[in-house]
Length: 369
Ligand SMILES: *Cc1c(COP(=O)(O)O)cnc(C)c1O
Image 1 (tube, rainbow, N blue to C red):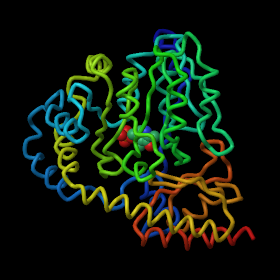
Image 2 (cartoon, rainbow, N blue to C red):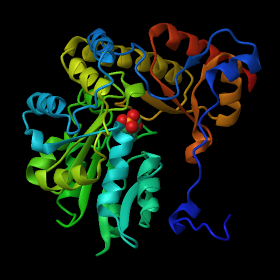
Image 3 (tube, protein in one colour):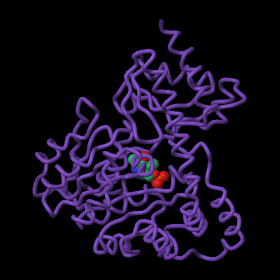
Image 4 (spheres, protein in one colour):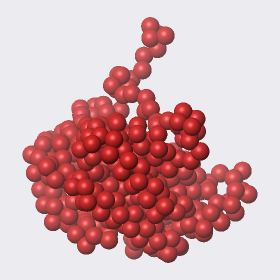
């Protein structure tokens, strides 16, 4: 086939994403009846009951195309944040929006600066467009190296990505740190602030709210999602907040019906359920607090987190910890995936799941003593 079919050369460098083993397969392989998955930063409480109601209701009319510009949801979000609907575009998850940002901005040879390890889609989306990825290692405290970012900026730099809080490490960049970056990057560079964990992070008074930056710097794009705190990961809905000029360009290429009808209605309903959001974040910090205590008692280092997961150093190979936890019905993410061999990333769970995880981890750590 390669004799006559030529794909874009950018695709040569990309690999097909290999998802984790399906839960059913793991159950069969290890003879388990129940599996707890604390691997994908999903909401352990599920979606809001209001969202479930909206989903059921909307199911009756999925023969009708969605509102292509998601006007109701944009008006709702605009009201929620005190901005205008012209500042918003809805996407098929944050994932689609990251691809759209690269499609709108990156031509061959353009450069994009990002941290490593961070969210993998920045690299993939920029590479796909023929852009050059300039990735700078996190510093000793697992923070973005903003000094390095500023030094790395050239005439070709189009985008600077800041994952705040960072995935997979969970820590935030503070207001002062983001201010320092902002005051040192040229106007022509688009600053992308990925705030997928915004609702968890704003509990920390030091956290930088991207909206404060956007007000002063129109060349800024904020990414948020309904996948995490709202528990709608399976419906795929996220949004960008930016200046109308940038939103208009993204709108041109987003796909006519990119966000679906059910997702739009569920997202609107979840914004009405402040209790669900509060309970989700409360439970999150209770679950993570218990994990932190466990690590502290054993002198295991962890990165201070303001997300719904925690990145912790087990002192032994994460492949071993991952395998042994899986035998005990627990799925987490092993750090070797990000080049941090002894770390694991664990999502918060219900308290029952948290206790189950910690007793399994206790057993696993004792195997290596
Ligand atoms: C989860 C996540 C997103 C977006 O996820 P979607 O489910 O595609 O909305 C974006 N950035 C980071 C860092 C994330 O962890």
